Amino acid sequence: MADEPHGRHSIGDGDAADDEIEDFILVDEISDDNNGGFLNTSSDEKNTLLTETLPIPATKFFKLFFSDASEPFTMLYHKDRGDTDVTIKPWTTHAQFGTIRTIQYRAPVKSPIGPPITRCEETQRYQLTRTRFSMEVIGVYYDIPFGDTFRVEGRWEVNTSADGKSCTLVAGVCVNWLKKTWFKGKIESGTLKESKESYEMWFNLAKKHISQNRNLLSPSISINPPEETAAEPIAPLKKPKKKFDTRIIIASSFFLLLGIWHCWDFGRVFPSSFLP
Image 1: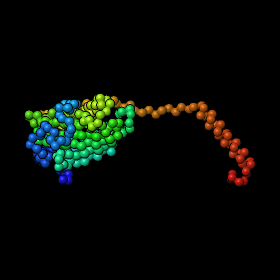
Image 2: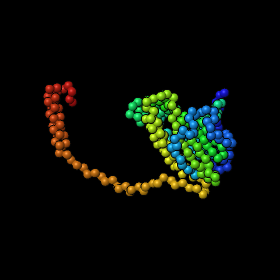
Image 3: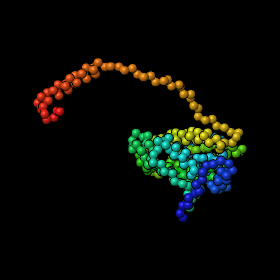
Image 4: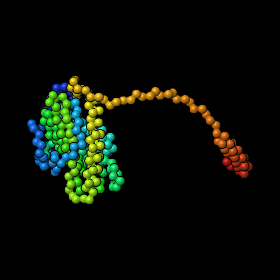
């Protein structure tokens, strides 16, 4: 069965925008088991790296950060990470796994060994109800040392609060081992450290993005924008005083006299060939 593209919608405001989310709601209830065998690790193996609250419900969380229309935000996140050659494919319907998409990019490598950049590919699957958003991610890193021995599997769970005005985000990762390696402990600790840094960067960008789209917030909920420090007044530029270097004056005079002598001597040898 061929993959079918999911609809592309703009992020908007009001009842019309709320109605658009109906096109993305796939199930009435999200199953907590690994439906379809997309991930090879269980939710119990996940290392929780991020637990936060945002002042929007789960459906608006999806529209703002993971729908096809949220591509500019995702591109900004990858740019801030230092990634290049980012390609974000639209969500499509897969016969076995449901709704999936692929993101490809090149990422800088912090390891002292191996290449400075690696090719990366993330395959994502999401499920959405009116009160819950769930996403699973499989990350493959082709060029890093021992990159063929493991995959990084991530889980995102977003639940709308009882009053419908905010949501709780819980995200984490787990390393799925394909082969044995002596560097298992080192790879796991490095993966968790870098994933936590990336998740925290994503969350800080998300808070800023919401503060810039206040029309998405409930009237009773606010979010503080990033603090800005007052700019110090700029003093007017003063025209620098000219300083004469005696060494430059002496050298210029020497070359001037040398040129005059050379022309005189040159004219004496070739009086009519080159000089007027």
